[in-house]
Image (cartoon, rainbow, N blue to C red; front, side, top):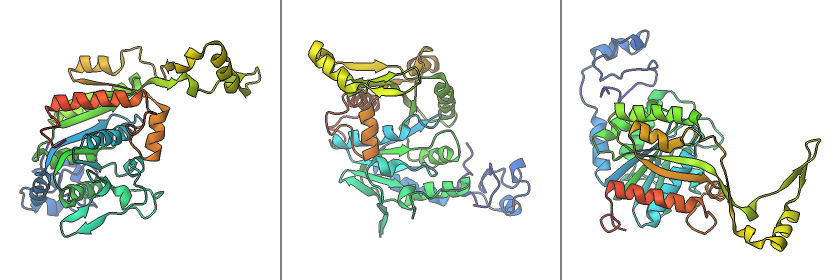
Length: 356
C-alpha cells in the first residue's frame, strides 16, 4: 500500500491516492479534483499524525481487528462478546468501533445514550467496567436514528482521531470492530496501525457459500496488506436451543397457525420427561459444501471454531450484556470460551503474563 493515503481532503475525488503519494495530482482518479494542482506540487513526506498514533498505541500490547466479508454475520456481536470474555479474565480491554455508518457497539455493550468526555490527556473511552473501555462514533451522534453520510476522507479522519486522541491507558487488548467489506475504513486502520504492530485479524462468517465467497475476498485483502489472519469464526452455525424453549405450532390447510406449545410440553412432561432436557439442533444455513472449516483448509488459514445461533446470545446482545454472566447461553457461551482460549494460545498470551 502507498503510505500517502493518510491526509485525504474531504472534497477529494473517490479513490484519492492521498496528497503524500508519489502519484498525487497525477493519477486518473485526480482528474477534475479541486486539489489536483496543490497535491501535485505539495512536498511529500511522512504523516506527522503517525508519530502521535505510535505514541498512543505504545501502551497497547495486543491489537486485534474483527472483520467480515459481508454484513449480518454477527461480527459486532462477536467483537462485543470477545471483549466481555477478555475483560472477565481480568485483562485490560479496549473496544474500538470503526463502523462509522452502522455503529452498533454502544447498544451491544449497554452504553446507549453515553457521551464522550475530554480531559487534558485526550478523549476518554466510555467504560462498561473499570477494565473495559469503549469508543464509537455512536457516542457522538445527537440522535441515534441519524444517518452518518460521510465520504471516505471524513471517515478516515475520525478513525485517525480515535487512534491518536483517545486515551486508553495501559491495555492488554484493543479489539477493533470494523464494518463489512474491504473499503476505506479497512485500508485506513491497517495503514495507521502498521507501525505500531497489529497481531492480526479475526474474520467472522456464516456457513453458507454466499458468505464464504465474500470471506475469501477478506482473506485476500489481509494477505495483500500484510495482515495476519488469526483465524476464522463460523457464526450462526446451526440453531441450537433447549427443546423446552421452542414454540410448537400446528399449521392448518389454510396456512393459519395454532399454538400447541402448552399441549406438547405437558405431553412430554407426562410421557417422556427426559426429552425436556434435550437440546435441539437445526441447520439454518446450507453447510453442505463444508462451511468455514473447509474454506480455512483450502486457504491455509486457522479455523477458530463454530458458534451456534443461540436465541439467548441474541437476547444478551440486544440487552447489552455479556453472555457469560449467567447460565442462559448454554450453547453459545461454551463455544465462545473455546474460541477465546484458542486465540490466547495462538497469541501465546497467558493470564499471568498479561495481568489476569
